[in-house]
Length: 301
Ligand SMILES: [Zn+2]
Image (cartoon, rainbow, N blue to C red; front, top):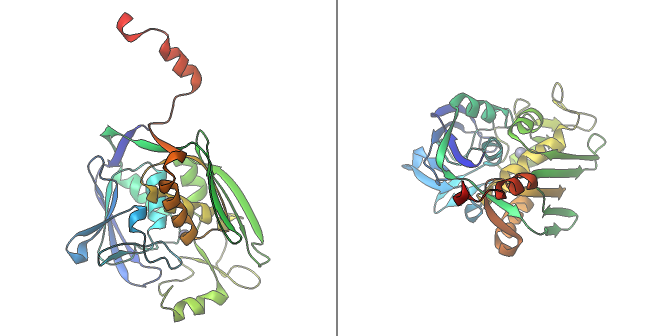
């Protein structure tokens, strides 16, 4: 996992934007080493926006990117799938401003990436390894990252609702764990908020096909995919928002009651606290391997 990776071939899907309600075609295209993840608007002559914290703009219940007059909305679920499956370089082409919501989860994007296949590239992947804690709090919302040998996420949520008063989960991320335990978790909203969102011109594409809708006594959808699908989706979201630091992260991310505004502000803060992390080529080998490697000096072989 220490070389950069892209897709083996291009692949497309069609859907609608959750907030805009607009039809959109999304294509994932292979890109050269060190390209990173870039969004491209085919309907605007191919103008591009890199998926980095420098370009965050237009946060409204979803994470948006903007550069000059180009806007890309609701990038977080796709970014979450791309980074979790180890795709470093890709062009995401859209013919409308919003990434399709699909079923409200990242599972359709995982499927697309698997169908396209993965290609190993020349060029080392650089991980952002956390060296000391970075903490951000806003009211009762909190997010922090701590040193760890792996990328782990702990998320806890609390709402004044009997169904999801409190949920908490810790996940040690790998492509397999993400695919099985996080990617299928769908976005959720409260029934009483839906009308307010629509009056503000949001959630126009929302339906029971692409979001869990929570009523006063239970969910309006047929069934949940996990008992704690809500907190799993928050983990999905924060992975996608943290992808905007531009490197896979080695550290333990801990969040309580966050949202996209807090997640993306934190991603920017992490990059600002330059003494709190270092870039490393690949995941450091376990200590016994390092000792073993020291035994014979290279020029003595
Ligand atoms: Zn989400």
